[in-house]
Length: 207
Image (cartoon, rainbow, N blue to C red):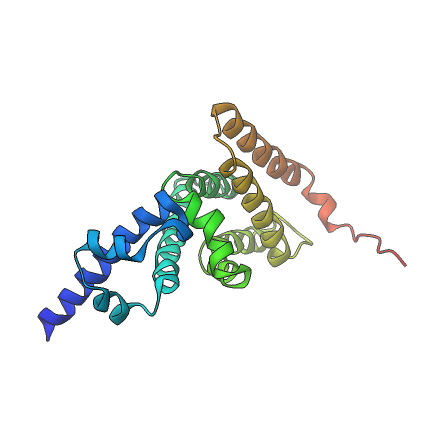
């Protein structure tokens, strides 16, 4: 029984590794399940035993990519001691991780298109956005961003970071593109930090 479970885990790991390579190179539509099966050296039956469909296999790969990005974000943020620097490094790490060659097509292009926005967004909230929200909640508790909903700010920042990543992923970014993007993130966060006392002033709502 133990050997069967180990063999099953090995089969799943091999299939997802090969599938990821094919989805990265050819995209979801261009990736052939038959080619994945052959390279993984398993039977088609083994694929359908562990995954209901090619789409289910892609979902597992996408979630693995989401987890990787979140781990890089957490590692980058935890390397700093000061909370604003943690926030900046986490935001920076998200963009850099998302546009990596072995991730951007799966994460930013095919992920939303194949799985649908709701599924993709739920994964994002489970991983990277969760870390962002937790950081903002900590900063709110410590008085760094008074008068602001951490949840609202998390969604705002997440949207900006996702759009920045999509922009970079849609082109072949050079060093200037990356530097400009990082400068914008830094400028935005520094602006909030500098004027955070203004956040305590209630906004005028239109009648």
